[in-house]
View 1: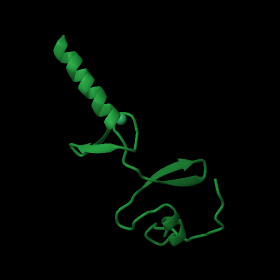
View 2: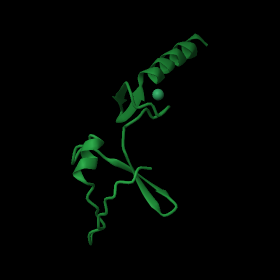
View 3: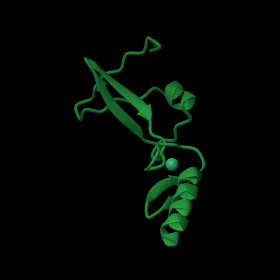
Amino acid sequence: MKETGIIRGLDNMGRVVIPKEIRKFLDMTEGVDEFEIYMQDDSIILKKHKPACVFCGESENCIEFENQKICKNCVEKMQLLKEETLNI
Ligand SMILES: [Zn+2]
């Protein structure tokens, strides 16, 4: 974990502003990108959310189907499964 030296307060609504330089470093767009929130001991970890394949977790080469992400590898596996199933 890299120390930034940045200290930010929690406002009375429970919000924290992520410093602009960190948002820029993570290539995050306000109002679009999301964080995944993790807890570890007394720490809160924010991780940039990358929509990923619902089957294997791959985040590259995904297509959207029924509001879910599916990677090309899993689409190919489903095609093989379909072919195998039809041959039974
Ligand atoms: Zn996949």
